[in-house]
Image 1 (tube, rainbow, N blue to C red):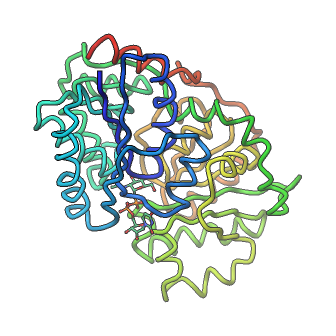
Image 2: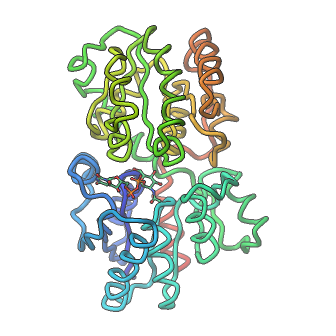
Length: 363
Ligand code: UD1
């Protein structure tokens, strides 16, 4: 059985890593790995391959950046001949990035079965590019692997046949579980002189938060107050970097001495940074999940989440981008204690094994 596995952007890499490893228990399955090249910087891609021991891609389509239409179309044009040449039994896509829908669409149009890992998540906010990618990918998938109960419910209400849906846990948490001990050895806290002090870790890259200087400026209003209390460690996504360096905000950022802006960092250093943080501020989807397992309070700088289980478990606080709301949540979080949240069902480090077993039976 031949399965083409697709990665494109940074958050795909921690999802594919445990799957590539789980295939090793199934000698009859031949996995191929295709990188679309949506992300291409060393620190957005290669570093993660090395740290997570992901095999080198069999093929890199080198599509790179562009508008949504150019990027999605570019991936489709480059991926179609790959599917035609290799004639796989299935194509597996993960997450919700442009590479996910682009490769999904190519596969089903060629009559190849599509497997979606991390299916069913819904923010119900169609202004998010990822929400469109999720809804469309799920609509054309043959096997849908969900991470939380809301995923199953959403798919059923969209008319997906129950027999295609499997609740398997969370491959991103497999990677976290497998790498936690290694991450504990990271020297990032010593390098940043953060040992034994309370600090916040921050990530931000959603277009709705970073592309408009007035929105980003309002988030900075809150960060300005927080950084007076404790350092904020901010590894910056390339998209965000462009806007922080722009004329509207660069002078302001320079005045915030405790907002410590870094280049993107690797998986192990970031896991260590999150694990020891007093709190995390983020607009990422995956980090909402990782902080749940790490039992670190997470303030989510979005109006909604497609991962409601992280709120139900008690770690995640959805606050949006209003500075007063962010600060109110911050004060609530630092006056409470860490480590009081629960663990979602099946987030036990074995999701990839379940997925590969089901694929071997179903395809
Ligand atoms: C993409 C995903 C998003 C995911 C995020 C994680 C889509 C629609 N969005 O957003 O869901 O959360 O990845 O990072 O697929 N750039 C570089 N180097 C790189 C990659 C990108 O400098 O290696 C810069 C380019 O200027 C590019 C911009 O970042 O134009 C945005 O990259 P893109 O892949 O379009 O989207 P992300 O914002 O990274």
